[in-house]
Image (cartoon, rainbow, N blue to C red; front, side):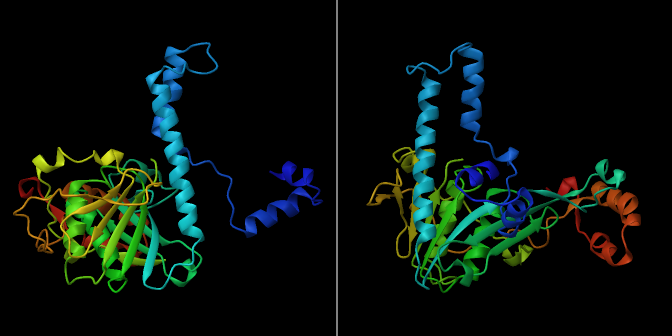
Length: 329
């Protein structure tokens, strides 16, 4: 990029260019863990099945699927930029949702013992505001660890519910999320959002989920984790498009249905009925009476092997970390 800068007639030293780029918080690091799985499979397929060919043949099914994925990725990114460039009104919140890198606690770089000690997993779901007025809205970060909450569908859904409650008075909420079925596109999440948008917990009129192709910090506590249920009807689900094919999903106050688009280019939503007739639209009770806890052996390992390396002020959290036993699950 420095050479490109010089070719355009700009004259500056590399050090000046580097400082200017750094001041704008621009990084050129490659996100190795963010590779597109479909593209990686396509590359592997070409190496195994089309050795010596510069380009896979057009009648190759894998080649066609990869091209479709690339086109959809370009389309979704284009519409995301459109949303990001708009000056949204105060009653509308547009955010980009991402489950940040999972880390192990305690984080003790340089301590060799920590590498061989079982630690607890911590999660960080970020709801970052986008749009020209995004600096007026704080980023919402929901954090939790395995001692408080697990990774079941109802527990991950609670992170969404917690973020929505922080904007309970916002009329229209739009979330741009990764096209991940386990995390952002499942019937439990959709059933729960239908309950929320029709409850008194929030006053939001509609919630829209827009899918990509593959801060204020809020701690996700036990009280925030509800026993969210998957209320979809197996018979009704057979008649609707597969979740993997849906690009936009909207939940509306006063309706038990979801409104979907199979493409970001579509102007109108299609109405779909997916809930069981007997499914009640209500916010459920707390999932469990206390924190989930971690394995006792894991806690003992941390207390005995890692706590001696910590200052006394950091040991209290680990001393009171709740535990669970196998017979409790």
